[in-house]
Length: 513
Image (cartoon, rainbow, N blue to C red; front, top):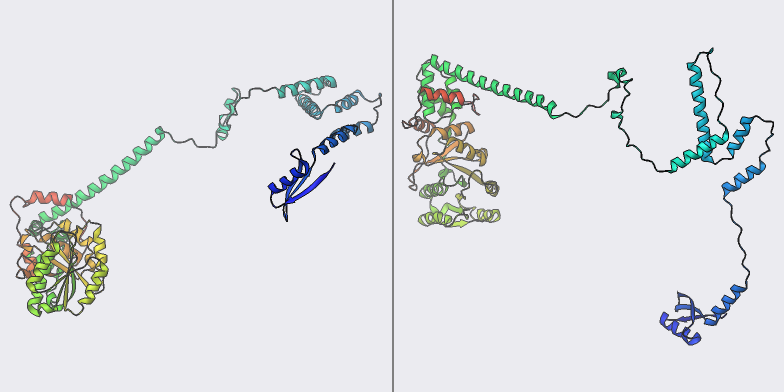
């Protein structure tokens, strides 16, 4: 047998060397990488035949069968166990023979003996000593062995098992059923059924109906008490009907009526109270005289651009157009900025356009030398999501916001406008379209409750002739002179309906009588 080692740079070169040495039938023993490349061990085909002849000549020797440790231990114990004397008791001999069984059979045999012993003891306890029967002879060992083998065969045979029974479903025999008490009942609470939920739903509905009935009774009795009071005091009834006809809210009307003095003219007293609670800028310098940076904001179509042009014209008349700057942010509507540019050309003032906050701040720095800068904004509804973006854009510290409110709007609409545009952070309110308002009461009512100041009033389209500053006395007198038409005028029966359905809460801001 000739085994030779071949080394080459690659395995292909190494195999080529093997073929040159032993031919195409060479036997490759192993291939492994080495420092020079690949190392191959190979031998000639004749060497394989020689190995087979040597293997056939060696005699075959069978290895001894290995014994398991358990079998060896049992065999040793059997050899070392002493022989049993025939004179020993028969039960001992049976136990010794049973010990020769398998482990499983012996366990069954022991279990069976314990059961029999237990049964014997129970029988002995139940029977009196006089009538105690003789003990039953023990089953011989072969019979026990056969019974154990039968139980093993039965265990190996697959049998059908009944499904397990839940603890709550254990069936009690008929004889023991009367003995069950409440303590033996299941510890769990059954899930509520639809029949159980129905009384609960009925109870909840009944409580809800009682609450609503209670609220209705309180509201009706309060309205009846108020109406009874009005019937006992004719002056209060007259004042209530007059204020409601002028457009004031029932809450503010009730507050005024409750504070009506016993003597004096009721309308004069109510007018004086409204004047004291309505804030105006009559005691402050006019906007065109004070100067500053003002941004006019408000809903669509309230007259912001027209009000801007009126204020710009009033300022240019007094201080000259050279001290005025105009900026427009209304780039949403088509041609909206052209309206302000037209007014700017008339006044001789250029109008600048700002598209974002950065450009607005740049324009404010450019016009910092002007005494007054007016910013016209785009009109957006109070429920528009872009309203908040517009207010953020005008959050510059030098900008004073003026909220333009349409005096002809409904009271509920004015409430939403004041809340959406943050009237608390505004410099004041400009009441526009005063000439179109049939009732000025709703606007003054909202301004009184929100404690807003009226800095200017617009009552027409003329620039700047229709730009005024009115006192609280003039506004209240204008509101009290408003008389509704015959269709909208309420009589005593209608007034009863209004107060019967209106809440009894007082207005947000208390009136100072």
